[in-house]
Image (cartoon, rainbow, N blue to C red):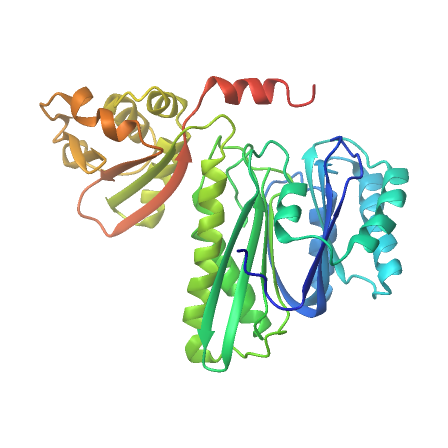
Length: 393
């Protein structure tokens, strides 16, 4: 059973933006003003909903809802796209008698296409009528593009004054290498929080989750994570409980991030790349990302080939500083490369059963430094090429 925080209502409708016979427009509504934190893509081509959401949150720290559509990204659409985004928000807030800037927008889909406002004018009243009739899973389904399953995560936490609940929803399967902070993430909570602390906690959670995954090395124009806390549980987060709440927020985000990699377009593997012994965390991260982005490493793991040469070759060009003779590479906890050469073993037979699993663990030790970093990546298959070659057709 999906746990839903108090004070949130959901709605979905089929607007026909791109998809037929499915919902593609969703609304998440808080029955009271919610402290709002956000992390946005650093892509220089920022979509209209990103620009509008950032403007809104520069003026206020509380909102009442999130309006999100799938099928059209409203990115690279110029002034018209910006105005269209603003107009869709106005349509809904007027029907709900909300004040200006109380709804945040989010969009995902094809870049460059303008909204058909006639479809929005028809869909928005239907969305209002549907409010409170949808379940969170329907929202998660409505925002899917190339995803094959809806992504949700939830957690309940007991605090001094009572119980609070987290619910996370996300979409994403391709164009995944968030730098924030095509992926969207929404986290809902019913605790009473300090806005500044809430924003800081979200940034830290995103760095440890969505920013630590990659499918194809592409950062979208529309990536964002929005987190709402409406206080409807009537439970304050005391300073000595903030660590517990931050950890719960991070766990929800990490679960959603794992699901995104699990659903990688055409993917069959979740590759856990852990780099330790680096000079510092930045050195460990660049090493992990170079391995995780490498098409040769990704295709080898798709083919269940323990090709250590591709791993060390990627490592060697990563820019990380290390002594090659000190490097150790393990797959599934089994050392296959050390002291500058492979370990003598029947590597194919020994690792065969480990490489057949969905989760494959690669551990790389660069030396004795304090730096470490873990990245989730996916393999690369023929299906990924097919999906993206035909995305607009």
